Image (cartoon, one colour):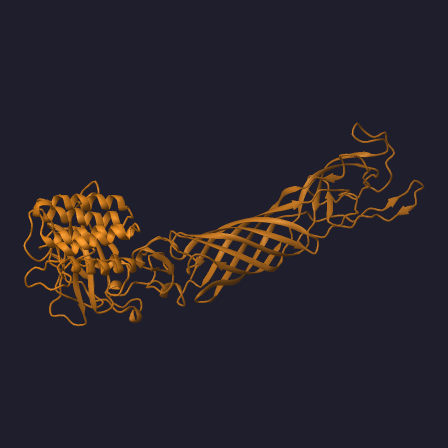
Length: 562
């Protein structure tokens, strides 16, 4: 297909090839220096009338546009004057025009007219050419129906060694160009502009860039400045198709597209893996629950939302295991019976609580602070998304704890003083450990609407305003006890570790006892194995009360959304 109307020059094709590379690749990549060099090289090829006047005009217009992109408006205007002198029909590039360039072009028109150098080809008007540019012959389909994919097929001439083809197209009314990689079909490349970009009547504009194995452009069919066009109509006479294929089927309009209707996407159908904020060309590249809006994946309506909102995946059940790490506070007199937050037991199990009278000696009867493993717990959970358009869930957790402090099997023994008179034992018998777990929770998910998405991560934060649980952890303690196990005063010579009239008791388990209520907050992430089954990992911080304690609880387990 000819590049421009009128007689072609000997160097037209070579010059326009450089023109297209400069504007379609370098300029759009903001590499103005490279674009300027290619355009100047193209103008050199056009010396001695080797190019037609329209081509020379296009080259000067393009060079002026490059200067304008670099804020060199005076040089831009000078190039526009040269363009109009070569071809009075020369016009700005619609897609790349700015207010400043338009003003410079108006001034250039006045200068060219005043100089009397504008030459119009006989019989030609002053409007833009409607013919597509490019150096590869191509004829677009005559028309296509609304809500129907548009087939585009480019047959490659033998002299062009093309390994790849990219279709750049702009839907009617859209401010941005989109891209599609074309597939090998017979002696060329083909692709279909998808339904989602053929939703209204009007012209779809496009051009094709051919590249070799190295990725270098080797030819074009159309260009951004002079693209091919396909009219989109409500009714057409003949259905177009790619070579050897059936005509594409009409899709249902999005607003009338329930899952299961022919042409509509299936619920939970394949979607891309791009997350919120990622660059995109089409909605199908984004994860379900996101739509491609203004070139990025954002929250909004799309064809996958019906599967994730209002019709499922708003209920989540789970099974999890959690470790209890209690932040033990450093303190003294832990086995003296004076601190209700501690209870000491003899080692070896059996539930024998220590009821002695430790001597006040350095490095005994005290603990240093730090994290201590208190046990673990298994839990079942259920959460429900309250609103279809807000990823806020409320739920409950119930389970059973393993570990904690042992049950005290004996009551405090009576004490006697030196004269044998009874005394009140200051120790209290430790209460039994509460193994049950229950809590209320509110959870908010980020980065998307679906709670479980195959191959995707869904971070979340949560708060548990109230819960029922107990977390008791122990550390080993040595004491020098003034009493026998019967409560009498010791009357011995002591030991190497302990002074006379005391007995050495090693490795008592000093348990820090926490309250049986808690409040908690934390954060986690769900990774989707399938569209419904995932794995949840989180870290919870629990504040135990009324007897204070701080617990860190890493948790892991499967979740199922339905």
